[in-house]
Picture 1: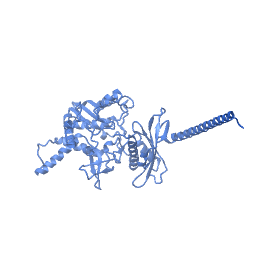
Picture 2: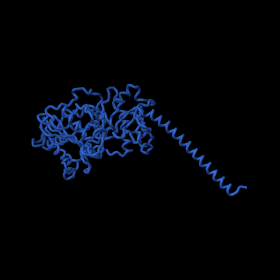
Picture 3: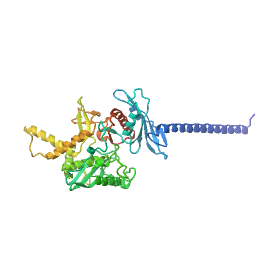
Picture 4: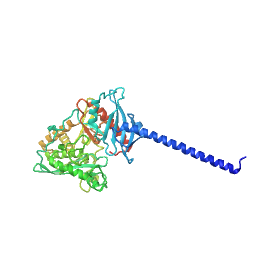
Length: 465
């Protein structure tokens, strides 16, 4: 018969044995799980490092994935400090003729740059059937910032002299242009140039914010509130403007498809907006459309869209800039074409001078119709040489961007256009690329996959664009 002390000893020893057993089981489980995780990570690294190098990867579990059936899986990539560095997305999409493209896509966390694309050769009815085709697709799109669109159906060599915008016939004065939409951080880029004796003598590139409490981008970058890789943005902006003064042409900055340039040492930022706005300033100079006329025309556009002047709308900031983003009014600054089925399709964006010229042309046509003649010379029309300049720039715009993208029209609203690329507003597109000759369909299908990745990440991260 066990005594009370014996029972206590028995219970104690049993408890110790159970604790030791639990420790062994838990320890064994942890070791086993750790080994399994190492095996998984080793497999992830083998599968993903060609599209996005990272120290570790984790599958992303989110209900949002169910809204994107083309996306098979998404993985979060982390650096050595376990900071998120990007995403690897496994996506398989189908073309209109039911051919498939299965890809692994790497996307950088900070810049939304496509870091790599790999083709998974397991489709039943593949669109891309050989390595040469895929290499052309990959070389065309890696380095792009999503979302992406095609500019045309053929390539124009960078050294083609017809592509360079020469700055001859510039009129002396101060000329200005600003972006028609704000970026995802709320900044509206602007460029201002001064011309003396037919040459550009001063250039400024900066951005103000739709949030009145946020300072200019240059000031924010100097204080550390706005950061990019490499030197601060203000320094990079200065370097770009200084190089432009040397070259006297924005196209000579050798901008790549992803908006970057290797021509200006120390510049890592996207210069696409600068190139576009500098080009617009040059066009304004040739047309004699100076800064004062620009602000007057922009004010007229605001009044037409909102029914109020910029001052009455309270959108003129302390520095005198008109702070407005036309993101919700793409018909204001987007050109469209009607396809064979009667659908409106976006194919280019235009600046204030051409928008104002269009208003004047319509007013002149209306007046001519009302009076039974061609209208009065009292209308505020631009001189004939300026009108020819506008028409030429309009034609140039039409030749740069492929109109064969998805378009929409809405009969319920009185708008000329609600256009899109893969159901994304044209103004939202970050990168335009030229499809290599003979590979338009492969590039176009891959772009659709990249834009699907963008839409998914936009939903997942709640991006404000």
